[in-house]
Length: 227
Ligand SMILES: NC(=O)C1=CN([C@@H]2O[C@H](COP(=O)(O)OP(=O)(O)OC[C@H]3O[C@@H](n4cnc5c(N)ncnc54)[C@H](O)[C@@H]3O)[C@@H](O)[C@H]2O)C=CC1
Ligand SMILES: Nc1nc(O)c(N)c(N[C@@H]2O[C@H](COP(=O)(O)O)[C@@H](O)[C@H]2O)n1
Picture 1 (cartoon, helix red, strand yellow):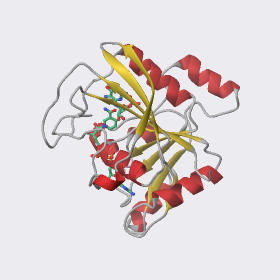
Picture 2: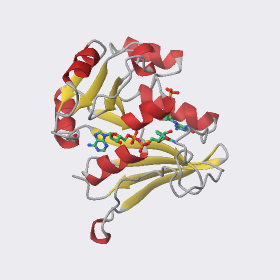
Picture 3: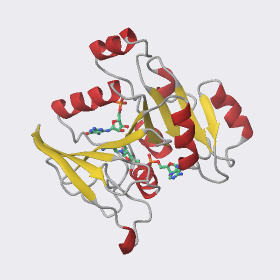
Picture 4: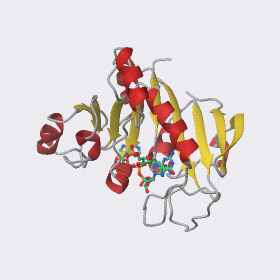
């Protein structure tokens, strides 16, 4: 496989929403699930999010546990995995938390449509990888990440990036914490948005495990027929 092993980790409400219709972040996970997410971050080579998530949440994507950061350091790795933003037009704010908080490498993946002056500014903060004309070419990017030594990639959303990765056959497993709340709203982001699959292309999943966690349930799925 010339791309990293890739999994999506997400938290959704019982009605499948990952934030509100205003794209306002909601605490869906409980403490146990947040700690599980932190362990996943600490054991991944890289974490990827879409620009929509950076603009909505301004996440730092750092490993929160000091012990886990120290364990990574002991193995000769940076305290935090490589943090990657999928950002075709180079819209990542220069003062985004992923640039400010925590040590470690950052990658901003842009396309040919990103303005040259913004790309130059982003290059002061991150390795900028350019693929695709109008949108990031995720397949080409994944090959490049693989050749950089990224073998285990955690995708933390949002809804549009999840769709793009899944519909390009780039995801091996999906971990979804289902919390005990209903968010509602036809326009609220769900685990997978985008344009949706045609009936003949709908993806099948195999249930790997289910576990009661906090006040919800953690479902782990393997994606069948991934590329
Ligand atoms: N509950 C959870 O676990 C999580 C929830 N979220 C929520 O998700 C929402 C953000 O989701 P979205 O708005 O869907 O944004 P997103 O984070 O999925 O980013 C999508 C954007 O990425 C860019 N992009 C660049 N290249 C692309 C490509 N090749 N294919 C597709 N997109 C490409 C496009 O500008 C696109 O609009 C926020 O409300 C956030 O709070 C985000 C992460 C986790
Ligand atoms: N696993 C999970 N559970 C929830 O309830 C959530 N709201 C999220 N959100 C994700 O966490 C990111 C914040 O990361 P930092 O704390 O800033 O490192 C946020 O952007 C979502 O990706 N996740």
